[in-house]
Each structure stands twice: as structure tokens, then as C-alpha cells.
Image (cartoon, rainbow, N blue to C red):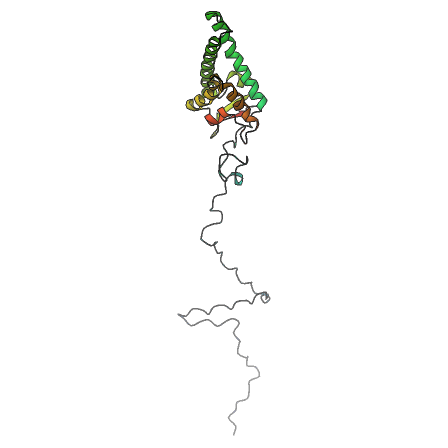
Length: 234
């Protein structure tokens, strides 16, 4: 006699697992299989998450480094400030026109010269053919002119002539009004050197013309002595 039991036609087949088998308690699940490069994931499945952000070599954000110097160097190529350092004229008005500078000096010269030469001529009754008399007047004029310029420049950066012509003297480093030592150096070169006999006048002509070829700041020699620059205030 056979011991085989007939199959129940109404019996349900065993259910196949619908997902991956759960790991036994206490064990971590096996790592997920990596998707081959360029292969699309099967329909109905989410793509693998992107790898975590990797910082650049050396650590830190790429924006942590400070930007390079102003303009990558001196915009007025040839200035005294090395590449990468800010130019002292940044944010300041443009450089003054040479013609305005000249007219401002002429106005200041008349403001001081007319009363000085007029009064000394009346009081001392100079013989204008005498070399000593002319030299003495020149010394008096130079000293008064120097004092006038230093007084005005240290307070506002402008003499009366410069105010009229809308130009201003500032320190090359930061544009502030000239300090007293800077103004003294500047105006001594302009006012006192020319009264030196023989070579003084020749030097004066060269030094006031220096701004016509000087770059980048259009400085005369008296500007270089005081480390100043002349700008427009229009």
C-alpha cells in the first residue's frame, strides 16, 4: 500500500519572501551592492544617494582664503607700492590738472608777493639795482610764503589759490591733510631752495616741471619731499 497522500487541490502554495531577508538579531545588514557606473537603477527603485561632500585639499572652504590685492597690483604701473598692495589714491578724487596747479601757484604768489614787495619797497626805500636789496626781499617773501602755505595746507589742504582752482594737497599714503613736518619739507623745497644764489633758480625750474613727466602721481620734487599728492576737488 502506498503511503503517499493525495495533494490537496485547495491548498495554497507557500508565500515567497517579498524583500531581503532580515539579519539575525545582533548582526548588521550586509552592505548594499554598488550600482555599476553608467547603469540606470531598476524601475521603482531610488537611485543611490550621492557621495558625501569632500573638502578641498588642506581643509577649509575655498572661500576662506582672502582675495588678492587691489586690482592684482598697482593700477598706476610704476608706483612706489609693490604689486598686491592697495594704491593710496584708491577712493580719492582724480589727480589735479597741471595747468590748475600752475594757476593756483600764480594766485598764491600774487597774494603774498604784492604786499611783501610793496611794503618792503616803501619802508626800506630799496635801490632795486642793488643785488643785496633784491636778495633780502626774496628771502622775506620766501619765508612768509612758506609760513602761509604750511598754515593753510595743514588745516584744509588748500591755500587760497588752490581753493579758487579747486585743487587740494593730501598725503600720498591716505589722502589726509599734510602734517606739519610734511608741509614744511614740501614748501621748503619750493620756497627756500630757489633763493640759493646761482643754482637755486635752475633747480626751481626743474623741480616745478617735474610733474610734467612724473608717473604715476604727477609729483613735483616738492611733492616727493613731503610725500604728498595734488588732487582735484571738483
